[in-house]
Image (cartoon, rainbow, N blue to C red; front, side):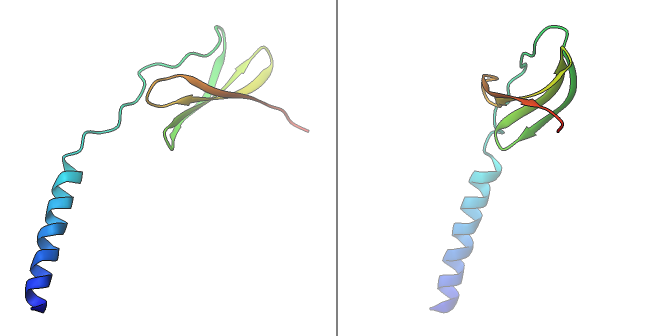
Length: 81
């Protein structure tokens, strides 16, 4: 009975593995927009977002975009104290 239970578990794990392995990769936006003339300092893809740090007009800004659509979620100014 225990061996049969292990066999069913192995088949279940194999099915789940096969389904997850064949899943399509997540979509990522092809472009995001920063202000004209801005100098991009860094860009990261983190937890479903694209985070771009750039310098524009003497200010350093962090913009967070949705990774799948490229839509701007939030912009924050970064300053030194």
